[in-house]
Length: 583
Image 1 (cartoon, rainbow, N blue to C red):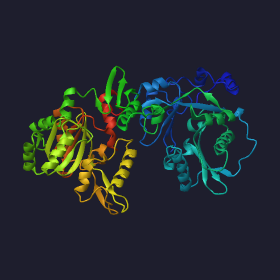
Image 2: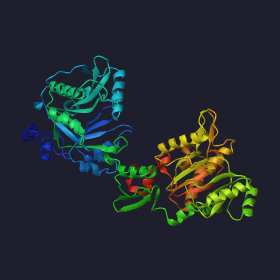
Image 3: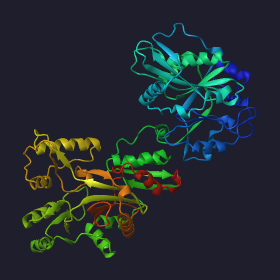
Image 4: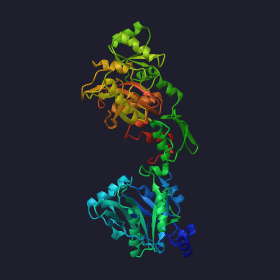
């Protein structure tokens, strides 16, 4: 820790912050000389590493050390004198932590008037204690500790303490402390507090304060002169406690790596709640990378992403990089089929619905057909497995409510497979299963559908529901039931023939199981349509053989439907290549 001049110590004792120059005066400026300190100090705390900033003579080395953070851990570089320089080496991966550092000079400390009652403070002794500590950290949303990874105290590592209820034996609080003199030969003989957590449900009062006071008194007994801690800048309750104990703000900086654990710190509050899940997934990833988001029409899912001079408009996953001609190819299913068929890709047989006799001839030729609006989305107006000429004309008439031009396709049974291609690479693949219900022996099929529909709406933010329309009724009746029948307990039934998510379908990730031909032909289809982001719908007997037919190309595929695949990450990579964290 940089040493204060007497004038700065006097300022702190009067409740004033030290000058920035005073903070740096005791040690030579970072990047020039750090004589007397152990160099490049990095301490493993079990949840990540503490990097002592002013022990690093080279800011680039400090930045690169932070970039070596292990997955699932949270590294912290504290006491960074020149944060702007460190950040310049990795601006997309590192960020300035929005916390305040507070310091208590032990000359200001006043012991409590009343002693601790009802619990004792001790060190962890066994695996059971560490499990209890991790339970507290988990409840607080903190990274859990692996005690096997902690730097030993004899090598300058931290020490953990816990509070144990004397009546129940429950662990109700924990804290970590670091002796700076042992850690990096600190001539100021400082110390610091980390990872304070207390059980929110314990009836014991003052657990957090008692743990702080314990560290203060412990480090005082070891000849230390002050205790530092970090607290979120807007945590008013914690700051009130620390002010009461005599802590004052210290002008120094902390840097962390951008990762999912720290995401709320560098993205800030969620300001995109009015967007649907498909748009919000993209804007969150953009904000995570420091890309500016401007919402133009939340209801339509339209927003603008800006980084430097590059500005791209999006409607969910449809963006300025998709041309109007490519959109035309995708929106017209007839045109999509013709384009892919001419290139040798497998598509259903197809024709535009015309006179009744011509339609009946197509049905007779194929035995079973699919009827859909030529330009439609979200599964609206689609009828599947039509085998009767009267039903065929009814289905054509229903489809005309969504588009005047209606397409007839040969029916191909099989699994509905969505393959997502971004920047002409397969990013995700999932089997889409139609909406399904399970009988309980009490509810009618209508009631079961309504119940399942409510669940799908809740799970998707209102984006998915099962329509109570003629297609649902026809699907139920084809299985020998009416909508008012009670489905026997345990019996399952598909209530839609299409697996569109907007009509209640669900996805099962199969990205790693795709046959190479399916992967290659999906990329070829995207290249033929010249579209950088597309969801291609295949019908397949299974995902591992090469047989398929491509039935649709969606120019605005839902990226939020493909967990755990990195769909939003690859989308932002396409739009802003320079923002890639792993180029």
